[in-house]
Length: 78
Image (cartoon, rainbow, N blue to C red; front, side):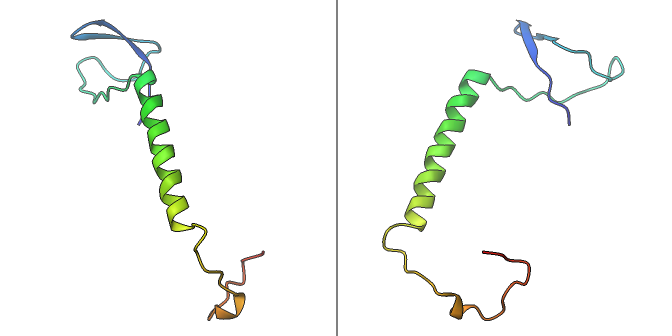
Protein backbone atom coordinates (compact mmCIF):
# COMPACT_ATOMS: atom_id res chain seq x y z
CA UNK A 1 0.00 0.00 0.00
CA UNK A 2 1.22 3.47 -0.84
CA UNK A 3 0.20 6.71 0.82
CA UNK A 4 -0.03 9.75 -1.45
CA UNK A 5 -1.07 13.30 -0.82
CA UNK A 6 -3.83 14.77 -2.98
CA UNK A 7 -5.71 18.03 -3.27
CA UNK A 8 -9.49 18.10 -3.66
CA UNK A 9 -10.31 19.73 -7.00
CA UNK A 10 -14.07 19.38 -6.63
CA UNK A 11 -16.41 16.93 -4.82
CA UNK A 12 -15.59 14.10 -7.27
CA UNK A 13 -11.99 14.80 -8.33
CA UNK A 14 -8.60 14.66 -6.63
CA UNK A 15 -5.26 15.89 -7.94
CA UNK A 16 -2.34 13.75 -6.79
CA UNK A 17 0.82 15.51 -5.63
CA UNK A 18 2.89 12.70 -7.21
CA UNK A 19 2.09 10.29 -10.03
CA UNK A 20 1.20 6.69 -9.28
CA UNK A 21 2.16 3.59 -11.24
CA UNK A 22 -1.36 2.38 -11.96
CA UNK A 23 -2.74 1.85 -15.46
CA UNK A 24 -5.58 4.11 -16.64
CA UNK A 25 -8.97 2.62 -15.80
CA UNK A 26 -7.64 0.63 -12.84
CA UNK A 27 -9.63 0.87 -9.63
CA UNK A 28 -7.91 2.07 -6.46
CA UNK A 29 -9.06 2.44 -2.87
CA UNK A 30 -8.95 5.89 -1.35
CA UNK A 31 -8.90 6.54 2.41
CA UNK A 32 -9.74 10.10 3.39
CA UNK A 33 -7.65 11.60 6.16
CA UNK A 34 -7.47 15.33 6.79
CA UNK A 35 -4.07 15.96 8.45
CA UNK A 36 -5.41 18.52 10.94
CA UNK A 37 -8.20 16.19 12.09
CA UNK A 38 -5.86 13.21 12.19
CA UNK A 39 -3.48 15.10 14.50
CA UNK A 40 -6.35 15.75 16.93
CA UNK A 41 -7.37 12.09 16.87
CA UNK A 42 -3.74 11.02 17.36
CA UNK A 43 -3.45 13.25 20.43
CA UNK A 44 -6.68 11.80 21.83
CA UNK A 45 -5.32 8.24 21.38
CA UNK A 46 -2.05 9.19 23.10
CA UNK A 47 -3.90 10.74 26.03
CA UNK A 48 -6.20 7.73 26.42
CA UNK A 49 -3.26 5.31 26.16
CA UNK A 50 -1.32 7.25 28.78
CA UNK A 51 -4.30 7.19 31.15
CA UNK A 52 -4.84 3.44 30.66
CA UNK A 53 -1.15 2.72 31.20
CA UNK A 54 -1.12 4.86 34.35
CA UNK A 55 -4.12 2.98 35.74
CA UNK A 56 -2.47 -0.38 34.97
CA UNK A 57 0.78 0.57 36.67
CA UNK A 58 -0.36 3.02 39.31
CA UNK A 59 1.09 3.78 42.74
CA UNK A 60 -0.70 0.76 44.29
CA UNK A 61 0.96 -1.71 41.92
CA UNK A 62 2.88 -4.30 43.99
CA UNK A 63 6.58 -4.82 43.43
CA UNK A 64 7.49 -8.26 42.17
CA UNK A 65 10.88 -9.68 43.01
CA UNK A 66 12.97 -11.63 40.52
CA UNK A 67 12.76 -14.80 42.67
CA UNK A 68 9.14 -15.19 41.48
CA UNK A 69 10.34 -15.94 37.94
CA UNK A 70 9.83 -19.63 37.19
CA UNK A 71 11.64 -19.77 33.84
CA UNK A 72 14.09 -16.93 33.23
CA UNK A 73 14.54 -15.50 29.76
CA UNK A 74 18.24 -15.93 28.92
CA UNK A 75 18.07 -13.00 26.45
CA UNK A 76 16.77 -10.52 29.04
CA UNK A 77 19.29 -8.10 30.48
CA UNK A 78 18.32 -5.69 33.23
